[in-house]
Image (tube, rainbow, N blue to C red; front, top):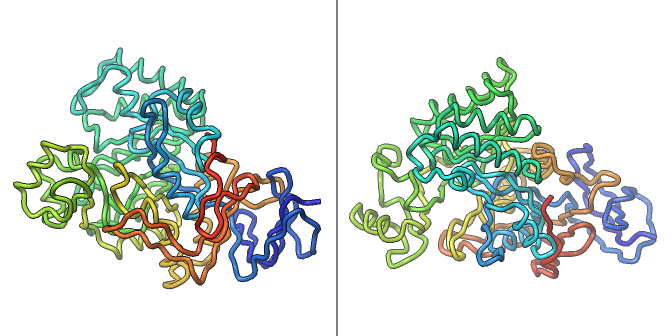
Amino acid sequence: MLDLLLKNGLVVDPANQVQSVLNLGVKNGRIVRITRDALPALEEIDCTGMIVCPGFVDAHSHEDDLRNGEIHADITLRALRQGVTTLVTGNCGSAPRDFAAYRAAYDGKQPINMALLAGHTTIRRLCGAKDKYAPVDEKTLAAMCELLEQQMAEGARGLSMGIRYEPGMTLDEMCAMASVVKRFGGIVAAHVRGDAFQVFDAMEEFLEIGRRTGVKLQISHIGSMAAYGQMAQVLSYVDARAAEERLDVRIDCYPYDAFCTSIGATTYDDGFLERYHDVTRIELTDGEYKGFIPNMEVFQQVRKAHPEYLTVAHVMNGEEVDLALTHPRTMLGSDGILLDGAGHPRAAGAFARFLRNYVFERKLISLSEGIAKTTCQAAARFGLDRGTLGIGAVADIAVIDPERLQDKATFAEPGLAPEGVKLVFLSGAMALKDGAILRTELGRIL
């Protein structure tokens, strides 16, 4: 007898080219039957009118490092409410300092699964490089490669680089680290060095890592890098270089036309208005001046006093974000990041917003393409045994109502949960029902 039968739902499993009304059977945490037959089960749930798909896999997110030995589940809880069952985190160069300690704090204590990338900037600091604007010496680089090798052996899925945030890193440094990742078959993901009119040189530099090392590449949040008039040309350039030079390149993007970063980040170093033009389109998410920044005097005052405050910059072109998200190389990554609950609505709404906007309403991509971008593509890219409903697969499942699915998070209220996520299961155990979280201890490091 089955433990669980999800019956009469539209089962969508792009990894196995399935899109049909079927019954899905689960036993011992794994999918064991996909059939039109009625089967006995300890629990039956009628999913008529619902989409039954793999739990979503977020290709690019951020979660807190340990604070006093604990992980604060700001991002993971918001992800679960969207139907996300796995995050790929440790992005933009910032990752846990101690993988073993992080795993001990995470497994069985957090609501969803997580795959970790090693963080280039984190490793730089651990090996003594304190100046983000300066290159490292050979001794420091050797220590960095050694620590990276240790973290890859401990289960890191690759290395993230925040090249924009750590401008002192050189191409030789990046290639030395990438060569370690290549030996493990991992991914190098990067927030590239420049955006807007600087993005072309930045893309060329990043692709050069692939040329020199053969490592698999992931371009992070391309919307926030190229949605200023450059997107079509950048996408064509990446396609051409990948095809002609056999580079293995994928992309992630979130479905918003505003980016989020701390006000103290190098993004806002001298000259940033040449790219974004107007400081009054930049919004503070916390503090005395919460809201849109009125002038440069306030901007500089807050940047000096509270460099950790997050900003939301409403400076991107929405049509170019569309180009990115409908491109075949692109997977959905929320880029969710918060500071004490404040931040960008993408952390709470990206997946519902993407499916509502791009699949159900505007029909820019098919249902199968949309589910693939949110499930199996990221799982396959990062080597995860998730993202599919095939026989024997781990039963991480989302059941969504296509009529009601809608993001509710706004820039004013970025934590609001979406509507229309009916059920979420991790390893066959129900974690969420009708928006209510039932269990918060089912997650583990993959």
